[in-house]
Length: 131
Image (tube, rainbow, N blue to C red; front, side, top):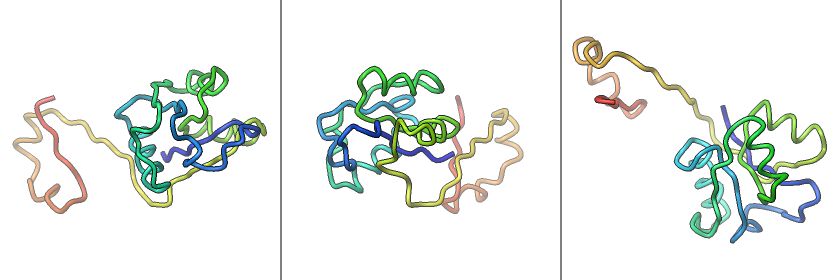
């Protein structure tokens, strides 16, 4: 599910460049929403480290982050639709790429005996074992 970066409708923030040195909430640092924030910063040619990134949580917690002072939040649906359609927020960045966010979990012993390493060696997947 793609994430988009939203700010309050009346924030005066015109784009990601305006977020330099401002607080931006993601669901969790290191998560997909944070990875997309890294991409948004790169697209705007500003250093990710120039943003004050905080953990905002999910659902009502991430929505509350913008009410508690975050300049922008990285959200996905249904919160994205809720914030934009209410008129309280507007999108300042959305992904310009197609991607699939899918994680498959399997017993490690099954993976070792049943999975052909070539299935993930073509760059379309990653195999992580021992978790």
